[in-house]
Length: 178
Image (cartoon, rainbow, N blue to C red; front, side, top):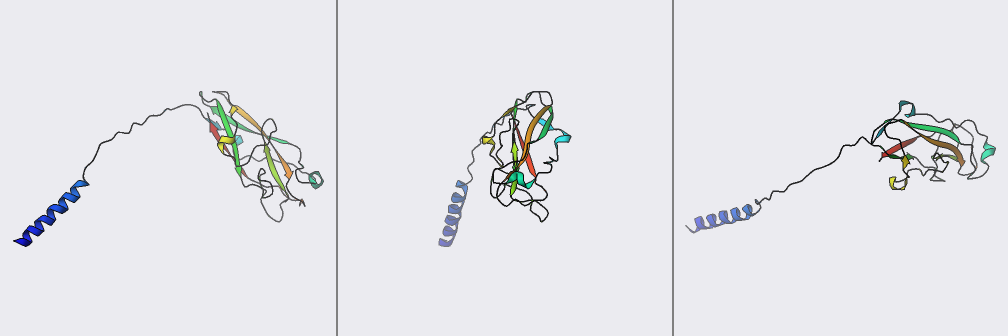
């Protein structure tokens, strides 16, 4: 009889301990948002484009910081939504080891070295490579129309000696719309 009471007591104790974890409370999550027409598409001609920095003499780049002439390139955004007001354009790529603001050239025996590529905005102000979105300025856009964004690229000497060769580099541009 004593064993039955022990088993029954143990069973009741187990039940009480387990039942305490079974309490539940209901909560509600309200979800809200907005759908806006505030983006643009990148025009096909601006996707995967090649910017030709032309042929440049090594003697143009005789010391670090020396640059070649500006080469313009555009990014066309079309169509743009009716609520778009501005865009932030960032450039992402592998930075030059000697100057982190420059895009590094691909390595290889036939490629140039000692230089990097500087990307500049429409006012020819250098754009920081791999910059956080908070550090990029907004560029105004015209809603409901195509918008052309102008940029420039050029070579900049980053260390001596400059080794002549092919110029090859890849950058990805990112867009944040307002």
